[in-house]
Image 1 (tube, rainbow, N blue to C red):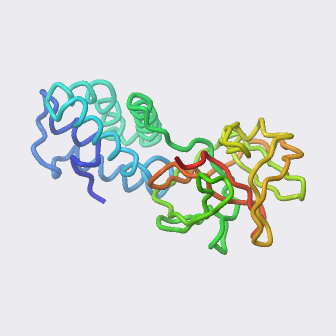
Image 2: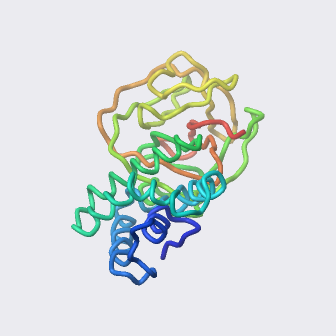
Length: 255
């Protein structure tokens, strides 16, 4: 997917900074960046959800700071220049890490909340017969709405894989979910805790089609592992589990 100035911090920074010598998306530097994005997307690291996250940031940059040279000078010198230098040198791991850091920093700057942590790649989600290591854009999710007692459907708009410390949540009826220890979990009355801190708290679960709140009776340290951070158009609390048809909800309740 070719990026453009409506959805890409990097291209805005390259095209509109005061020292720019780039006149089009066909410039060699712009082509190199698109090549990096394509390679990075296959690794499911930063690129699969870059467009989704960057578009929100670019919209706020243009609204609050103006689509002007001085604005893009700042983002070029603060973030884009270092990322592009790594891309041109084909140091893609370094570029990916710098791009991830840029997104997180810009989201914090504008108060954008995105999911953190994620669920184990060996987890299942409703509507899918395979584990989430095979997740795709537009796959369906079962989310908990803000009544805290009803579910509805949403879709995946982005995802990113990371290696993180994992824990396994165990409910009183034996429903299990392995997820990153820092994954937020919405509790019965709307409080939010990291998954690692949920023992003896009521967490949202479902089996046999029955949604309910159950006590988390154990949080088992499960070592380092690969987690999938799932994104949607809005922040949502979605179902997943270590077994099919036995679900625990993680992330924040939608507002």
